Length: 146
Image (cartoon, rainbow, N blue to C red; front, side):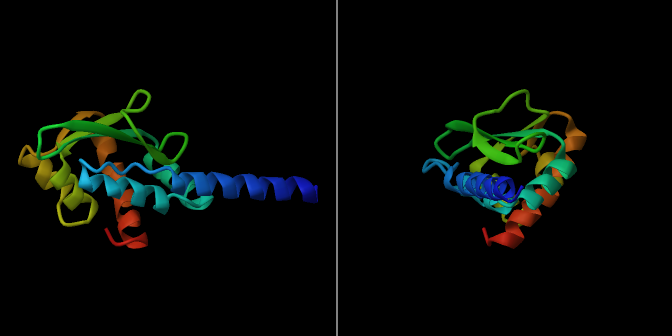
């Protein structure tokens, strides 16, 4: 039984390391660094499981940079508890906003409701699930300063 639990610990450690090493940052989208910080905040099994319990959804983000280009990322809080590039499989909610506004939102300098009301944040899908993302952003802010 001891050898089995050691294997579990090694496997868990590898998963956490891969979680951190996979980067989501893209040079054309400076705010995409926030996705790596979210992944770091979800690196431990307990943090990841808490986030999955709180979120229970796949959040897709489509950002538009100053050059007018768009790129997407997804935060899977349904199964995996991590951010990856692309829209992901069947996003529960998709948030579309500028790279600049996302950077401010992730840093706690902008409010999602205000961005939505002013038309700077567009939400497609389950709008109520979008509220579930805020505690995860706050956790990422507290674990590392954006």
